[in-house]
Structure formats: structure tokens, C-alpha cells
Image 1 (cartoon, rainbow, N blue to C red):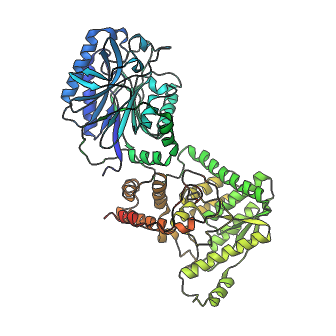
Image 2: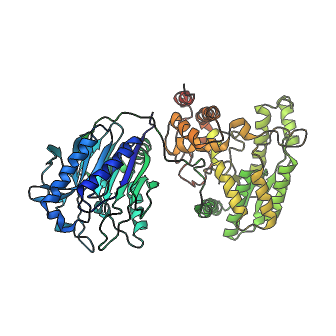
Image 3: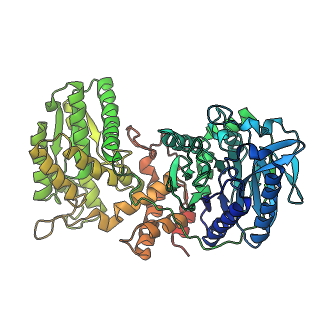
Length: 640
């Protein structure tokens, strides 16, 4: 299976101005290299057969004939290859000269796309030689002995995707042709360009390509002229860029003196999912009514084993590199703003948080502290409640107490042991049987205490459960599952860890920082089963439900991208070197089973702020019946 990936390339060949024979040879080399690497479609720079900077030589009949003759040679020499190539060359017809993209495959010209917008300002004066596609009424052209479709609205359909083409300045127009092409079904747009360099222009160009690929929810493959073009007045750096829905997948080395082929895979399946989810895309198609395109079927491309060159972040929810501080601050600010509005609206006099010494409750407490500080309220209005039970260890209890003390909030401790013992007696449950009754009774006792203290202090219970726990249903129904406002509800476990660490390292005193960093390093546990003989945590969550980094990876690609289990497994197996395939398969099956079976807990979640692109709120991002069948997903996760 290719899992929806289409392998594409942007080529930047060496060029000699007006030397079509040399240029054709360089083009052939890069086509052969790309085909050998499994590339399905490759795009070359604008007017690459002749060179872009020919100037008034474009009026020479010899140059035009040489270009066509060399195109014939390229067709002959690549007729055994499956790859689709998009070349730039001038094409003469009916007293006009067109700046075109010529699409070829297996010795045939599939279609010709003329440039729509011809720049005629500053260093550009293309209208001196070329005619715009807007001024051409013909819909076909004779080229290399073939009569082929021609027009700016051609769509090329392969077995895997549909693509369209625009040329250089077309991208810079207020409404680029690619917008119409995308609305008519183009999932990938190829742009052959001759953008010259100038200070600051490269960053603007990348931003333009990124935005257009995002706006069109499409792949965008861009290739522009490089070394060898005339430097009489300008310099060309050779840009090969491949974007997918706003994200850069691959880029060339700028100002290289050597030929380059930039390769990556565009996930067309993901793009289709994004378009289906984004109803504005369909509405725009209905309202804008662009001209009806001509659809051209390409030759079948023999399937090959998928060899992914693009990489995937094992922690897709976690900001990377220089963006970490900025992203963490933004996330924290969203949580704080959400809680502040709810506290002000309800006129609450306190915020009640159950403090366990674990990651989630720590983050919730930090959000409360920041919220009270920003509102100018006394931190004593935050009531941190520790509720030691049968599985509470000295280590986590000490961290809980130390943290609340260092932050200057009100501390209350209410042991749940006696109440649970009495409860077990009342319902005739053997206290030595550490089953789900034993565990959930503790969680519900804690929830009752928090709710009653909130009533007692005219306050609100602040929920601590995170997105990963909600996805897996790793919460006790009407226990830690419930609160009056859940500040962590759309933050996955892997991100919770980084947020707590970020807060610890930004603006905390030494005492708080030390405790916070120790909490980050403490194993994740609900602490509902008694500690071992050495007083250590005996119930490690990730031993029971699986590694959270795997589950967060599964969750992202299942929920955000709509991927099927086999594709998620394919990506995970290539992303995580720390787990073998059997381990990944095991926990993927667990994820699929639990995600469906535990929907009933998500159907009645308390309010809470959406933070990122993924949320499980039943009022927002995820509306799913609690009795939906998991059979298809679990069966595929078993990879039978």
C-alpha cells in the first residue's frame, strides 16, 4: 500500500542560456534520477529548455525550433519511464508565443499550460515576447507532431491524485490560478518559476507558497531557475520547495552551482480528509464557480514499494526547537484566560484543586496560580487539597505538600482511607480485593470531597484530567472524570510534561522549581493500589495502558488527520526506534479498543478550553455516538 502518499520532486538543473541541447541533456539526467527513486511527478523551472533569460532571442525561429527538437529527444529518451515530467519552454502558435509548461509521460505530450499572468514591471518585461493565456482562444496546439490539449485550466488525473499547474507570476496574483484549480479538484499544484533573488524576497516567497498550499489545502511543488541563467541584471538562486497544507516538507540548497533534485511525499489522503472536514472549502467551490477544467488522464504508473523520505515527529503535540518557549507561553495563556473568564462569570470565591503530586494536578494548580495573579486575587483563594489513600506514597505526598507551600496557596488535607473502609463495609466489599471497585471507590470519594469543599468555600472544582486520559477513558466515571471546569482537557500527556517543565524553568523560585522538576521525573500513576514493600509506587499507568508517547502519536494521526490504523502503524514503526513492531501493534489495538469503548465518558465532559488543533469536547471537535462499533478499526489494528 502507498497509504495515500504521492512521491514528487522539484528539479533545479544546470542550464546554458539558449543552448537547448545542453539543457535537454541535463533535464534527462534529472528525470532518470527521479524515476529511479520512485518519483511519480517532477517539475522543472520556467523555460528550462531554452533558459529563462534569453531576452530577444525568443524572437528567433532557430531557438524555437531547437527547443521543439530537443523536446522530441527528451520524449524519445524517456518513453520507457513511468514518471510524469513538467518542463518549461516557449511554444509558438498562430503568430503568438506562449510561455508554457509542457507535461510529458512515456513519449507523449499530455498537455500544455500557458502562463496566465506575465510580469511587466521592474526587471521583468515578459509581455515583450509572450502572450497571456487570457488572450488565447484555442484549446489545443500542435507540438512534436501531436495535437494536444492546451489551456490554463487543465487538470491531470493519475491513479493516485489530480494535479494542476501554474507558472511563476501566477502565484503572486491576488487570485492565483491554483485557487481555481484546487476548487476543481487539483490536490497538488506544480509551479515552474524564474524568481530572481533580492534581500528579503526568499522569506516572502516561502511564506507565499506556504500560505497558498494551506489556503488550497493542497500539496505545492515549486521549482525556480538556478545556476547558469544570465546574471546581466539579476541572480537566480535555484529554489526547490515542496509544501503540504502550509508545512514545508523539503527544500533545495540555495545558490548551489550543482544540479539538484528535491524529493518528498505528499499525503493526498490527508489532504482529502482535511478538505472534507473543512466545509468552507466545499462552499467556496459552489460560490466561486470557476471555469470548467479540461481533465486529462495520464498513463498508469506501475506501483512500487513506498520508500518514505519525509520524517515524522514522534511527539507531534510537543513544540520543537526555538518555538518551544513561545508555544508553551501561548498554551498556558489560553488555559489561564479560559479559567479567568469562568471564575469572574461565576463570581467564585475559590478554586479547589485536588493535588496528588502528579503531572496533571500540578499543571492545573499552576494554571490557577497564574490566573489568580493575573486577576490580582490572593493566592490563598486557591485551595489545594491532598487526599492520601491506600496507594499514596511518601514521595508524591511530600511533593504535593511542598509545592502548595512554595506557591503560597491554601493547603487542606483530607484522608480518604476511613471513608473508603466504611464504604467497603457498607457495600460488603472485601478490602483485600484490589479490583475496579476498590480503585474507583477511592476516585469517587476524592471527587465528592472536592465538590463539597467547593460548595463550602463558594468555589469551583478545577479539573485535572488531560486529553490522553480522555482518549483512553483512563478516568473513573463521575470521579476524576468530573469537575466544574477542566483546564487540561485538550492537553495531551506528552505536552503536560513539557508545560510543567517549562513553567519550572521560567519564573519559578528555587524551591518550586526543584519540586516541579522532581514531579516531571516521577512515574505516572493513579496511586490506587498500595505501595510495594519499599514504599515505592506499585501501579505504573504506562505499564497498564501503554506508553503515552505512543498513544499521543496514535491520537494525533487518528483524530487530527483521520488516518486508518494500518497507516498509523506504518508511520509509528518508522518513527519510533525504541519499540518493536509487535509492541506498537499491541498498544495500537489497545488505543482503538479503548477509544471507542470509552466514548460515554467524553459525551458528558465538563467545560474546558480548546488549546490546540485536537480536542475531544462533545460540544466541539468530536461528536461520536457512545455505542459506535470499533470492529473495523480494531480488526485493522490487528494487521491480519
